[in-house]
Image (cartoon, rainbow, N blue to C red; front, side, top):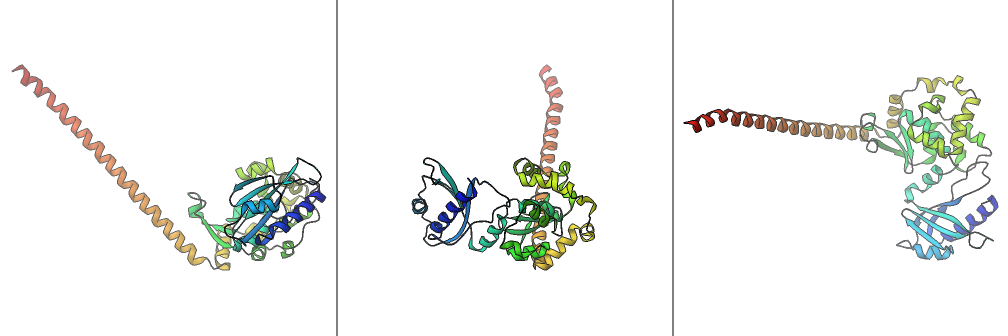
Length: 306
């Protein structure tokens, strides 16, 4: 749908949704966008418990509703086009994650670009905030390796050395968003070399046009590989881990989680060793029994001849 239709339907839906939730907002759109496929709204703190999905559907004049918590999809009439509809996705999040969720979904592919920068340094941003990964656990269980750092958007921007102003304004152009992404202190051009991309990033290349433009056009055209920043080149994952634990006061949690993991692995190793010992003993007992039975056969045959 064209921007004018998008904005009109978005504002109308926001007005209706606001009567059901204490907080409701729409993420900032990607720059230079000339057409929109659907409308995304983020809400929290329902005014009526339980959340009256059917009532909201009627308020939106939705012709169809798909419920897949925490996101509800509504087919809202397309203005001036009878029989056509606009998909409106209402994502219900916890109040404590509302501001972060808005920022994390804003500016289109911004967090896809930033994610590729911070990942090599052990950092992960998802819909609940910024996390640091415990290296010793990561290769075995990525989810268990995550330590939550913060869901405060301005704090995350400070940690990445990025301008807080982006929280309340949009980018004028795609290139300005690309430039902003490159200004984070963890940016390394090597993280965007096509053959070296991780599976998720290769999937983004195929599905996300702006991500593909950044990797294939922007980084090479700016000759960013020749513009290494000393702080980034010298920064190690261990240094980032130590800084994150100190900055967000997570040192004790890190130690406790790592100790618990090691004890769990030690217990599993002990159980595995015990199973292997029992299996070897059972095999040895079986072999001994087979040998004993075979040793009885000749004497049994001789007894029969007598």
